[in-house]
Length: 238
Length: 127
Image (cartoon, rainbow over all chains, first blue to last red; front, side):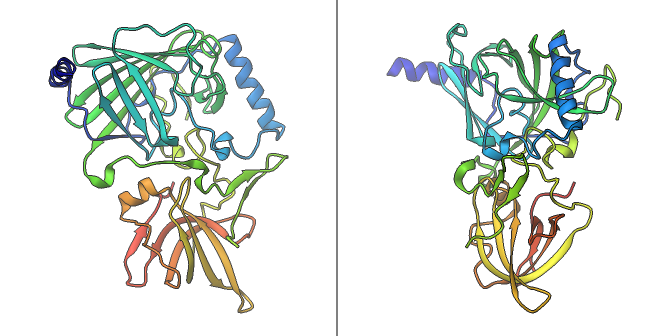
């Protein structure tokens, strides 16, 4: 117990201060996809199928979020208006995200991502430090997880599904005292012909009003899709 | 916006208004070009996820009381704008600025509420 406590205290003293909560700066310039992703053949097939359904009126009026299906990695990290918070332990870094109340466990004990990791919305993550930058490797992201990508040579952004072999490498560091930067390299042959890169900035908040909150989407979900994909709202409470 | 190489693809405010995977649902059903103001009596305020809801009785064209359902933000960011579960009490006389439903149903998305004491609580910023 004493040894474990000592390791924990020593570790915490060596780590950068990421306390407080973090909010995506969705209005910031120079954020999002660093450059237009180069789509693979399979990626173009997905995009063109979404376009066909859209033009034929076959897309539902709302995405699956309406049924409280969470966003997964990597899109969940820059969710606007939702905070996240880091918790450092001796063998892992835990991140709680208000968006859909999701949790990430980033193992920092030197393990590798198991080949039989359970596919999950947040995937399976390992991490190590390179000076003051946390490098996080993530795989085993459930392939039903949705992503929105910009389409080359257009102004479109299309919701697609990544493949089972998607791999993410995040480099997380403080840019200044209250700004966190996450650069993510996304490798996924089901979408991209070469690794795609994103950059997002997060502002630190402190104070009780900024503490993270519970988010149980099924608590009072008064929106739904009918069998034809039309969106409805339950407007009365009687 | 044409997407170009070597340029960041900025997602911007559209993320907030439900055109992205981040959103719980689409807001295409609401007329975000023509805000209206409702005045009425609070029936109920649900400070819940994924959305808060203000149920408000408003006088109809024939003098009848019409219940409107006004969708608001989730408590996590409403609390950061000064809201609490008790901000709106049954019987309160309030006015609320909303984006109404396009199809004429008595519903909308909340922009702000003016309380009986004249103070204003704001919700999601407009697009």
